[in-house]
Length: 277
Image (cartoon, rainbow, N blue to C red; front, side, top):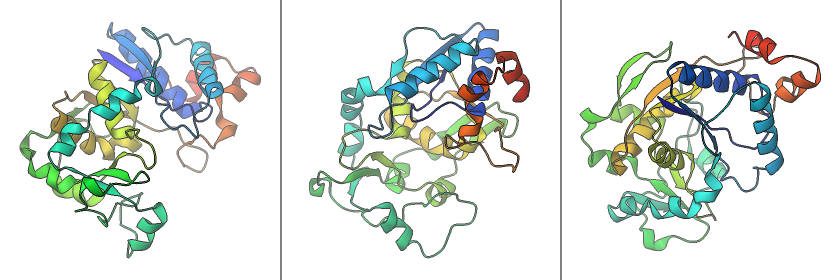
């Protein structure tokens, strides 16, 4: 068993991060496996060295250990940029100049059950030769699915809410996920979905342990894995830590930051109790 805790150093860790890190660490150690630490730090504007330092400090304070050196995505950008070339060669990518405001304006109404704006395909059909430096690159999901045997798009889930063997449904992926960005505007940096797929394959990740809010995005990662000939790990989506109003914690919830609990004298054992471990 090889898994990873992969925070983005854009803010302090909170109780939800602690739960995910501890759970992944304990499951892996119990199985005699390897627990890796990855910094998903390709966001040049928001990632800060001081946040990475605080993450490492918090994890160490919790009593967690990881195997090998910290993997920083920012150190592998050149490698990431070269690897989507087969998708471009197969005509599966297109440039996109749309802003988030453009996308919101083009959607006639909110999509029921979808908590993000699915790209409406405004730039689909543009040739790569028309890409400008400020354009993002998107995956033409319909074209990609047309090249795959959809019956093979399966993954195993061991988390409590969605446990079982799942088949990726093409129609649902098109409706709820759509043409995701694989390379961001103005930066030749691959986006989360692609960088994560490359890293999981390169690091030999066998199990991905993360919050159940990301379960809905697992199909696009499975699709990318098949497109690029990468292995599909086992997924374990755990429950979320929520505030008193029932809302999941986010990095803006500074009141739940581990650093504040530490400053107030909370012990690592008490953190485990607070998050229900």
